[in-house]
Figure (cartoon, rainbow, N blue to C red):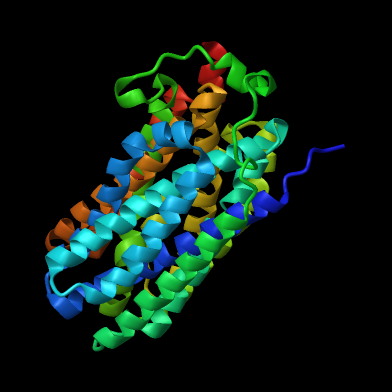
Amino acid sequence: MKEKIWTRDFTFLMIGLLLISCANYFFASSIAVYAKLISSSGVYAGLLTSSFYFGSVAMRLVNGTLVQKYGARRLMLIGAVLCFSACLAHNFAGTILVLVIFRIIHGIGYSVFSTASGTAASYIVPPKRIAEGMGYYTIGNVLAMALGPAIALSIVSEESRVQFHQLFCIAAVICGVAVVLVLLMKPNGTARPAIGEKSGAASDAADLPRTFLGFEKGVLLPTLISFMMSFSYAPVIVYLTAYGLTKGWKNVGFAFTMYAAGLLSSRLIAGKISDRRGADYVMYPAYIMGITALVMIALCPNEPCLYAAMVILGLCVGGYNPQINVFCISRCSEERRGTATAAFNGACDLGLALGSTISGILISIIGYRGVYFIGAAVCFTAMLIYSRTLSERVQQKS
């Protein structure tokens, strides 16, 4: 009989991630539009986005240690409260500088919550179903990608700051609900298993040496690939709405829904494929789909083509992302999973931060199409690195 994945606390974790991530995608999908209310410069859009991710990345350096010391549930509560406070505070930001500060605080809160909840999920999920379980856990983030941009872009416009204030308040409310869910979780339900209950993978990894700032050496390659992949599609997450406006497209929000549909589809099956057939059967198709999608977005003549490209991109991200997470947590000891999760999430955030910042600068030089072509090239490079380092063929030879 299979061990149960869908426990009460696991369900609360997924819903909590959905709510916190939904608030994040409210901002990620609309901040470029909000920046146009403040200035015509694309640099502000990149700044407001990257400040969130830089705050998140900075916190990732200590999140793992904090989770180990204080426990996942306590850190989730702190993260959710910070997200609630930051979203509400956006209403009172009178200048770009103050807004950037609130974006950093929001990034810190999201970083703390996502690291703690991801670590808790890895403890709750049965070891023999780890890839499947982590794929299910991240469905919360997938649904947020579908709902967040669609809700945000249905509320805001280029002409009204009032509508943005409404959006900020809605974001604060859903973060408040996440706070309540964390409080309802069992106090010991997210604690790591006793040492004697370690999984085989964790036991084998127990002696892996640490590297600078406490990160495990074994996670460096997976996090590098995670960084590169996030960097490659950051311009899609941040600038697709603005790109659509230049094309005269009226329903770009639906493109994010299609993206989420692809994500959800792949995450429902990618974990099972990986557990049964091996990681290569997930990773290589994901890379090919990522390259294809980014080229399609660059060349899209109309919205139906964009929707198709976003489904393909969703299949890519939904396939590779949980698998890279599994690479990280399986390469360290059980008690160090918080650090491994922090490294994985930090790499994602750093990729999004630098990707959005550099893209914001490059768009004025080479245009949106050029930026998406660069993303495809970065995705191809990530595939080459994987094929020579982490692929099953290389691992079997070593």
